[in-house]
Structure formats: C-alpha cells, structure tokens
Image 1 (cartoon, one colour):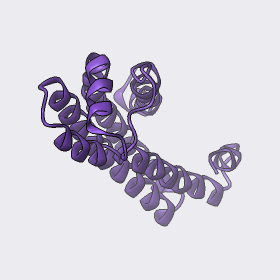
Image 2 (tube, one colour):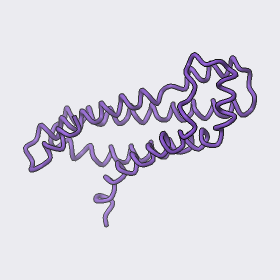
Image 3 (tube, rainbow, N blue to C red):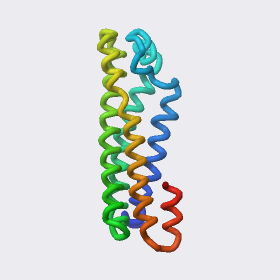
Image 4 (cartoon, rainbow, N blue to C red):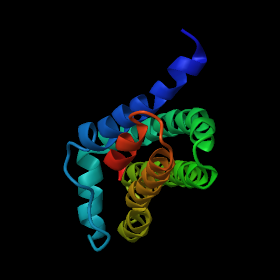
Length: 166
C-alpha cells in the first residue's frame, strides 16, 4: 500500500491515541479543579503520577498523527472548497498547539507534585493545566471546516458525511 492511501488512517489513529490518553490513562478520575488546594493537587498527583506522566508522553504522539492527517486531508478538501479546507487546516493546527501545551503543562504538574514542590506552586501549575478543553473546541472547528468542504461538493456520498460531522 502507498503512503497516499494509508496516511489518512492517521486520523483514526489520532482519535484512538486521544481516547487512550484521556479515558484510559485518565482512569484516576478527573484532575483537580483550578480552585483545589495545593494539598489536594499534591495528593491527586501522588496517587496518579504514572498515568499522568504517560498521558503527557502520549499527547505528542497524538499531535504527530493529527498533523499527518491534516497534511494529507487538506489537499483533498482544497479541491472541494478552499475556504472550508482552510478552516479545517487552521482547526487542526490550533488543536495540535493546544495539545502540545496541554502535554507540557500536564507533565510539569505531574513532575512538580512528584518532586514535592510548594503547594502554592502546584496551584499555579494546576491553573495552567487546562488547555485540553481548548483543544476540543479546536477539534470542533476542524470538523466544521471538513463538513463545510464536504457539504459544498456534490460528490457521491461525501455531502452526507459532512452533515454527520456537523
């Protein structure tokens, strides 16, 4: 099989890695709220250090898969709609950026808690460890761009896939 035919599967791999990261490795429950005390944050990451660190390592893998998917899908969508394909690609890049920031901040928080850093510093890091929700909003932008490009075209069953994305 050629790379042209298999590269789009990176989108599926991206979703699988993202689900493993947030659902599989998030098995310890949701991370502490931004208003949590330093002691609560330290206790959470003391109990979930390994899964938090593994999640921080897996997120960049998801980013690489997303960028490969976006780079191989963008030219296809460009043939259908230049504007909507640009929305798709911008959403993918913003998602990638948010996930990189999420991985870095999550790793820093897990390491800081593991190294017994001052609780007030943990609170500050915990407040910064929220970009993953921004990534999900960017994924929505990416899907709207893909949907717009697919709806704009009259190619066989692709418009109905666009409606599903919306």
